[in-house]
Image (cartoon, rainbow over all chains, first blue to last red):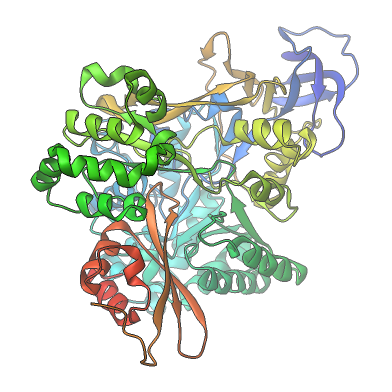
Length: 555
Length: 80
């Protein structure tokens, strides 16, 4: 054997109770699970007191670009993620003709907040076809990749500028089917489409111009391979989402394909959304359709600056009016003592400072304020003998209105509602958006949050159920063979962690994008070792290794 | 401009701020149709500002009772 993990608490992905034992690996595969292994191996890991689980699978990411210079999909790998699914929401880096690259870059910038530098010089754009893209990826992968082909780029390839003008004709439909077939043959795990996303000019992405006949024709090709259709429905409108669930069910039944939609999230503003959508999902699943709603574990945070009028201020009309003023008038109003006192009185009536006390400073431009980043306005105000609202105004003015604040846990934040939802047997835990929205919030650590919040704190899921949800269930839903379980013959993707410590770290700004570009990230807590196809890819002592044993995996 | 009560047009019944999937605050509008049906529409911050302006409203409460035609105008203007 190449590697033996000894004395671990084996949580094998089946959902069955954990048990003590050893795990043996040879040639990238699991060869022994449970009991004592008498043989020795070139490398051995003592996992006493630790959980030994299948590597986690993240089914909704946008690592398409990042993987070209960072085959580890940092920091996803160190959170125990051993397989990522990029290419969601109709966007993938292939198939793509060279002439269409600028248009795709614009879409990625708008939707994923991927900076220009990520496309200029960070990698060599050597491909047009899907298999060419996969060849470029394979050069240095440390994480496994199960890539989707994007509907928008398939449309762009076949229809050119007309992709954002009209429905496809019969000839174009046939060409799109052929192109999708080539992507699936090359290794695409399915097709992604979107009814929501817009490009950098705020115009609908190409997939949104498709009529149902086009989606049906492409789903027919998916049916030839039994592959996944991923959809972004109009999640902001429950009635339309219900119609999409019905539509996906029809496609699933007609073509015998799995489908998944994301995101589905809970919000006090729309309290019956989740129950209505889940009732429809249950109804359609009972018919034999496969329509998997993806639900994220993390609550939704809202970021804002004083430079743009955030709707967060709408509940305090005086503030909202001020925020909507032209920039110079806004600054003058905030500097005017009389107007400022009126604002403070509105935000903190009778000295009640609760409204902004939990808001945190997220980013500043002035060096002397850097120490305030990550701290709450309430803490800072207490130190200064001031109030949260006053501190927020002072910081904004001192940072030329560019001080960024974050109000945490404003949506999908009621654990008593989210916990049971995550435990629902028809809910697919996902929708992390890993690698997207990089300048707005961190999309990493959702798996750690699942264990810390919903297993350890609240007991909505057992440890075994939670592991199953993000390993075997995900592999089964997507049809990924021989992954997601600790079982002889399966790929040796393994995550070793401390069940009492696993969690997501604090959100911090990192300047690790090409040319020092900024993004928000979270480190992992409680993860000891991450093994990809039999080799240690990361451990808590040495960090990332040079193993680069990641593979392109398909259904 | 005040609420335009009395006509049979669909009207905004509620206006509230909701968290958006992309980390921004959005405006969730409940629209009551003349047949009693209830609908919802979500606007981003810029579209919400345009709606307030078009309705002559200073705050969200003043959107309640307004005709949905204001909303149609804003959606048409933004190409949504």
